[in-house]
Length: 240
Image 1 (cartoon, one colour):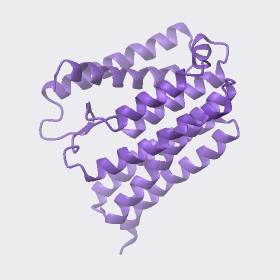
Image 2 (image 1 turned 120 degrees about the vertical axis):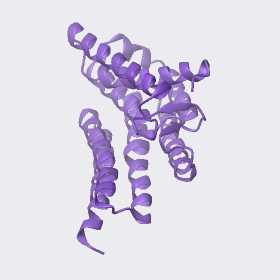
Image 3 (image 1 turned 180 degrees about the horizontal axis):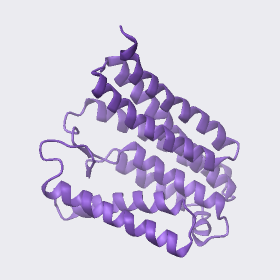
Image 4 (image 1 turned 90 degrees about the vertical axis):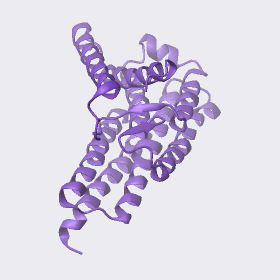
């Protein structure tokens, strides 16, 4: 096997390494560093697939390694970040373990995705990176702004566990979720409209955060919450 064939797997391994190191930082109180490592893992997750396509270097082991890396970076890491967030907010010790269930459902989500032939150009259920970024950005905000109204709300014992339950349900649901993958009609019709609406909402969120001087973590939190809400609204009104 040529060296070129190993490049995508090497990039995937960097995704896995970011996830593992991120868990260490999260447990040591460095949730901001952990979140940036999560974002780096997301970048490597995008680049490994791109490299595999450009180099024509797809392999069965690459697919398995990709799922294992995503399990750590977008399953274990965000659940640990929510765990540390609840600890910092003074929640009771037994309740802090509830967010760890998110790692289990992320694993189920990844396993379902691997065997589901319907998800080539869109998703059924919430993608694990989206769930991870919601959890990670919330943990960063509560860590950076413990006196804020959002951190105060999250300090109630049921809020983060409830968020965990909702995200777990969305991960394994059959709710259609658009992606930025392109297929034969990837950028046309309803899918194109969904993407355009999402980009417009994201731009508005970024502008509001800049104008109001809010903490930067509100941007990824708001953007990916809007992604979830938008898809739920389209599903509610049966707009495919």
